[in-house]
Amino acid sequence: MSTKSKDGIRESITANGTKRYEARVHRAGYPNQSKTFDTRKEAIAWKRSMDTNIDNGRLVLDSKNVTVKQIIDDYLDYRKKSTIPLPDNQITEYQRVSIALGEFAINNLDRTDLENWLKLLMTEPRGKFKDGRLKPPYAEASARKFYYCLRGAATWHSAQYRYHINEFLFQLQKGAIPKAWAGHRERRLSDDEEKALYMAGIERKDTYSPTDWKRIIGFALETALREQELVLARWQDIRQDGYKLYVPAQHSKTRTERIVLLSGVARQIVEAQRADAPEEEQRIFFQIPNPESLCDAFARLTTRAKVKDLHFHDLRHEATSRLCESGKLNMMQVMEMTGHSNMSTFKGYLHLLKE
Image (cartoon, rainbow, N blue to C red; front, side):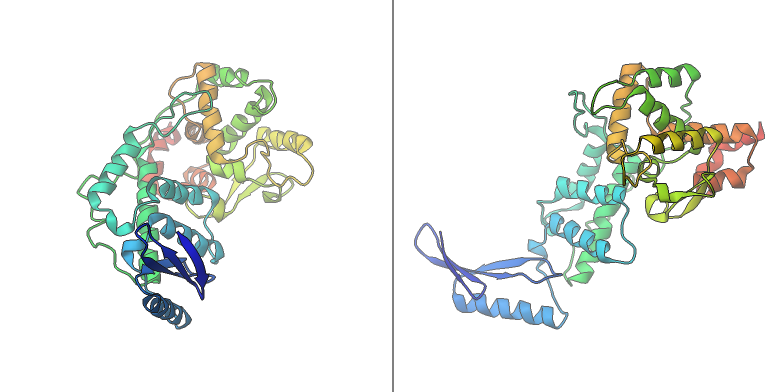
C-alpha cells in the first residue's frame, strides 16, 4: 500500500508491514525508470546517481529491467525526431513487434525464443477479419522484417543507454531467419477475374463500392505502385499537368524516390478521385485509411468475387508484366518506373521483354 511520495521517492507498506522505497526518474527525452529499496537512503542515492548520469550524458540502464516495449517506444521516438523519420508502414512493423514481445525484458529472451516466435509468425493465423475469417500467417519476408526491426532497435538502444545484451541473442541457427524473397510469384490476373473483382464491391456506407474498386485496382494496374505508395499518394505529388506521379523516398519500400508515368487511364482515375475528394483532403485515395486496411479489404473482395490465391501485391506484378509486354518502355525505364532496385528481383520479367 502506497502512503506518500516525496522528492521522487514513493514510500509504501507491504502486506507484512515493512516499508519499501521506490525511486523514480522521469526526464524528458529519456526512458522512465524506477527501482525499489529497503531504505530511503538507498533510494535517494540511486536516484541522485541516475540524475547525475543523465546530466552528464552517461545514462546506463540495467538490462534486466529493459523491456522490448521500452526499446521499441524509445527507438520510434528517436526516429520521429531524427532527420530521417520512418515511413508509416515501417512504424507499423515495429509496433507489431512491440505487441508480440513487448512485455519481455530483452535479456530474458534467448535465441530459441526468437526462433519459435518467427516460426509462429509464419505458421499461425495472424488474427481475424471483421467477418470472422482467419487471416493467413505472415509471409517469410514479413517475418524477416519483424526480426530485423527488433534487432536494429535493440542494438541502437543498448548502445544509446550503455547496457549489455546477450551476445548470442541474435545469432540464430542457420535457416531460422526467414528469407527476404522466396522466389518470383507468377500469379497473373485474367480479364474475367478483373471484372469479377469490380463487381464484388458493395454499395453500402463505410465499404468500398464497385466504383471505388475500379479506381483503386485500375490505378494499381496502370502504375505498379505498392500498397503503401498508392495509399499515401498525395495531390501535391502529381507533376507536369497530371502526367507524372512523384513517389517520395519516405513512401517507398526501398527508401528511394522515383517518378511514375501516368497513362491516360490513370489520369482519368486521378481526375475522378479529385471530383469526389472532400475539401482539404491531401491523399488521392482518401477512401483508404491505411495500407493494412486495403490489404484486408482486398482479401474480403477476392472471397466475394471467388478469385482464389490473389493478393493485392499481385497487382503490382501484373502491372509490371503488362508494362513489359506493351513494348512501350525498355528494361531500364520499366525498372525506374516500378522501383525495382536491382536485377535479381526484376529478372523474372526479362522473358516478357524478350517476347
